[in-house]
Length: 161
Ligand SMILES: [Zn+2]
Image (cartoon, protein in one colour):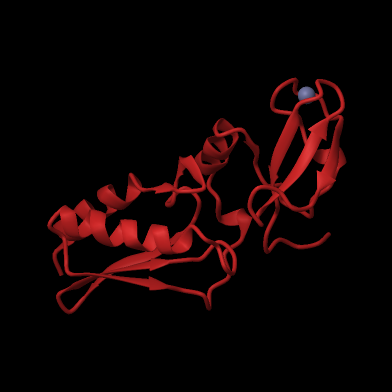
């Protein structure tokens, strides 16, 4: 085991962003399940954020090419579809990055318009427009106070209560 290789790999992976939310690192989004060495390969386990996420192949290819480019290969990226990712895995920093991109971070429970705070005017006066936004993981809403359209990151894998 060379811990130096893992430390270097963690630094490289920490810089990789979610293609759908370019301000957010995939580590902060809770998408990196584990990194370890197996034989001579560096293994990275990625959790898919939701079934059919179009960003997933991009993320897998980026992780492979960045690590290989940093001289840390051979690299094997495993997609752990058997481990359910939830929006609760997004770190506090990840939630801040989601908000910085202009998307309302996911709530800890099911999506309720009354619990959404408008990021523009900070009022709680938001109406859901559609449960389907620009991507399947987002909903579209509008603030009744300032009139701004909002994108809301839907809670995924959290308890319905
Ligand atoms: Zn507003």
